[in-house]
Length: 143
Image 1 (cartoon, rainbow, N blue to C red):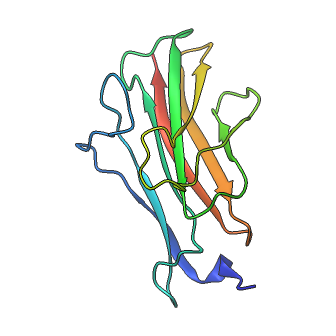
Image 2 (image 1 turned 90 degrees about the vertical axis):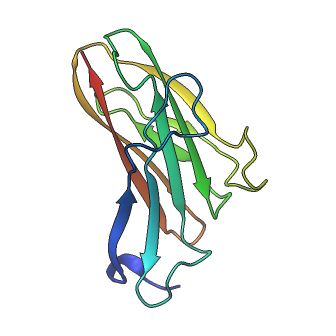
């Protein structure tokens, strides 16, 4: 098995602020796409990538329901694990791993409520069968 820990330049996080996430319902969600590139091989089918998003993206108050969606690409192994950044228990969900190319129901969905105002860094991760992980972070502001 290849040890990817030193082969990656970085995990590239491309977040296009003007992009509207097609997976979101309701208000537009900023949707970062995480893609890992092996410097020796380029993009590889073995590499896991994530597409996380959430809504609403503005005007969130304590107690409001925030919907989080995630879809993993290039693996159906394992589950995505959400850490909402507020000390609450982690939540496991499972997207379809894009088994059915771009199926609208391929995203795993969960809802979370924040008890206090603040800035929260939300983390979601999934590991494939070779042990290669993809991790993405979202910023949630609760007023």
